Image 1 (cartoon, helix red, strand yellow):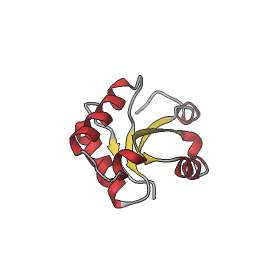
Image 2 (spheres, helix red, strand yellow; image 1 turned 135 degrees about the horizontal axis):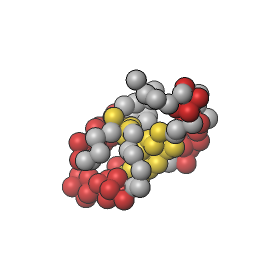
Image 3 (cartoon, helix red, strand yellow; image 1 turned 90 degrees about the vertical axis):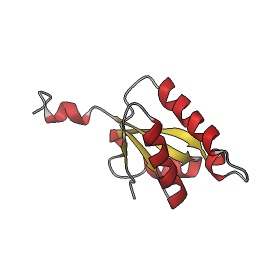
Image 4 (cartoon, rainbow, N blue to C red; image 1 turned 135 degrees about the vertical axis):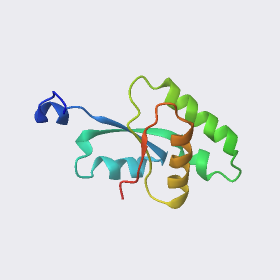
Length: 106
């Protein structure tokens, strides 16, 4: 059992990395219930996963650089709104040494 009090646990924001995060979807996430419990970060840009030509190896390497450079825990990697981003979040979770949870909010 954690030695933190319930009110202290609520003050710890989780770092959630979002695959393909764009400005519109950032607004949607930040307006969602309990959004104050999370910090949303981009792990792969929209262009990196929806470009006309996508290099899988380059995108995974880019995701790994983002995750490695982050100074803090990587609590989750999510695909927010479709199958492609959900698939990429699973791949990112597999290359990360920090072993975050891969999950979808909706």
